[in-house]
Length: 301
Image (cartoon, rainbow, N blue to C red; front, side, top):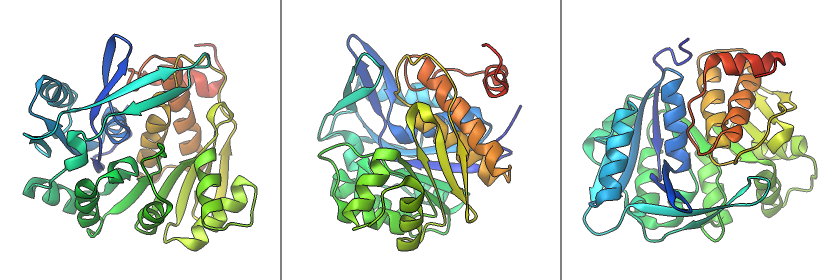
């Protein structure tokens, strides 16, 4: 089954190693989105930066083997490949200690990166990569291109300002929040509202974005698409860890919507993939379509 139908996607931002105690797994929200979109049949490039070290070589090797364009991942001689220490609580929810400066803080665009974005259907970017001016300036250059822009809000204290978040939202066609992020940002923008639906409408009115989604953990997600709100109430699973679940959700949702699939079908599909990622350890587990279909139809997996 191929959902991507040759959709050309570019993800911009952090590539790194998530460190779980003695174990390391490739990660970074934009890379997680890119890898899931690739499994869904999209043609995907990753724009980032790694260090000239063993960690960097291993990332480029693994990402290349998984089918992503890696010539747009530049190599820094001055900064190390990113590492994030991940701590899981008893519910599998993660907290992150993010090393700074890392190579992905210093992304410099090569000509291939610019050409790739110019020829893409969709550009996915996040907020964390903007903690450093070098990578933020590179992103601002890419946001000038005529491409569908998806902003994946990814609040990691202290690595953001509301002014910068607002600028990133103003460039986006589609914005993805979790429920806490939406309420925090809306409040910072002086929203008088309390509910998720009201604040989605508030953000839409105060930005150029015409679509957005809000994830609600085990309670599913909301989608604002073409002026209408759609909802999925979540799927019952046993959480292993939440790392990457929202990234795979976004990848599935964007792939489906931009290929013209029904909005309700798209959010149901995306919530199922996100749930199955949360049920498995790490950000990028393999997920079969039979598992997705069983979960969506209520059958025992």
